[in-house]
Amino acid sequence: MNDKELNQQKEISTLPSEKSDTQKPSLFKVVMLNDDYTPMEFVVEVLITIFGMNKNNATKIMLDIHTKGKGICGIYTYEIAETRVDQVMRMAKHHQHPLLCSMEED
Ligand code: TYC
Image 1 (cartoon, helix red, strand yellow):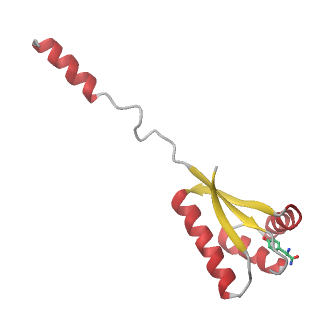
Image 2: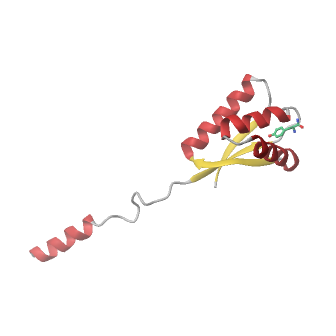
């Protein structure tokens, strides 16, 4: 291999790969499930404190979950979604409500 070929090879090998920092991270939906026992006011409180919703929006989402069986509380990167699910489950357990929450790849 002559010098020119060597330089060309070097340049090619230092080109940024297609998988670089411009790749978007995978996103995850935080999904809340309906149940027959958790009080509506508690679900609204969870949506306000953990997902930063205002009372109007939290009430709409809670009623949507209540009628449809489940609903999306937010869409986040993996670690943030995992933390939100953990926070909901801890808050529900602490108050002895059977509320369930999980994450699904978007
Ligand atoms: N179905 C509950 C009730 O009638 C309210 C509820 C709403 C519970 C949403 C869970 O994710 C939920 N008290």
